[in-house]
Image 1 (cartoon, helix red, strand yellow):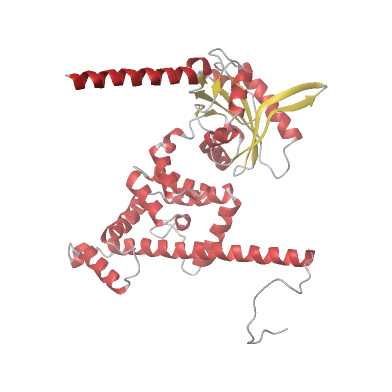
Image 2 (image 1 turned 90 degrees about the vertical axis):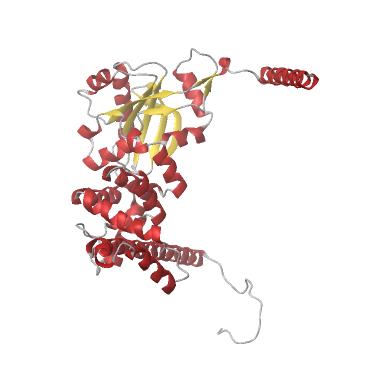
Length: 400
């Protein structure tokens, strides 16, 4: 039936809903979502490319020498007059464009910018697809080359994020670290600012490990960025000052959401006390995770005491077991993570010798002790006491 001009109310009717229709509808939705992503990527890319090229023009044309010190302000006024609805032509924004271009072209080694793109393609399928879309968009423009040209991954980062990175980062390595994090994790502007305030660039990647010896270079670098050298377990409470691994594991498992937040983006909780039966003997992994971007299992062993060399052997056993029994051909090698109360770096490194499985050792802090915390009744008594003392003090002041 072809729609005519007769008025009608749209409703569901005279339709046979079957699996073919459902599959077709799913395909339509998928294609439209893909079109939305492509459109958003392309629009942001074009704007970022414009900003980069305007910053380049200001540098290459030596605009201030040629047309005077006020030329940037003049360009700002002229562009705002021509495009009154666009908000990106303020004088400060134009200065940031010039500074942005200079920061990366004067300080960056070409290989570092290429390396960023390679790491992103390896780390996440969705990011890789977006990069492929950008290549298609810019193929004719040849803007993804380095050496004064636009670095392709930059187009996946909003302009406001670039400004924050530019304002707060001291060198090219730190800036590229946060550019990569923004793309990989889809960081909001506030989340990016918090990461920079927390100095994530310095605190990530310092875990004692053997990843470089047993993983491909790109994967090794990404794993080191994902795992921390110290974990803040301040969300967990144990009952007594003297506690063991089981108590620690129990405290952490009571708040899996907070545990995953502390572990970092990309961790999926698989199991606690995951049982393995080998040779008729049962053994249990404390915590088992899967990391979505790394595409591998992460075996986590907890120790409520300082590191001992024998801990490495046990972790090695569990990593091998997961590789044999759970890992699929599509998964990357399983990672071992031991989190203990304290450690001596030399002890850890010597323990790793002769072990071929990738693993790292970190510490934890800030576990709360329930006995050390006042009970609700005690808190109530303290508040009442403070109120009485405040009341007495106020009456004394009034009588004087």
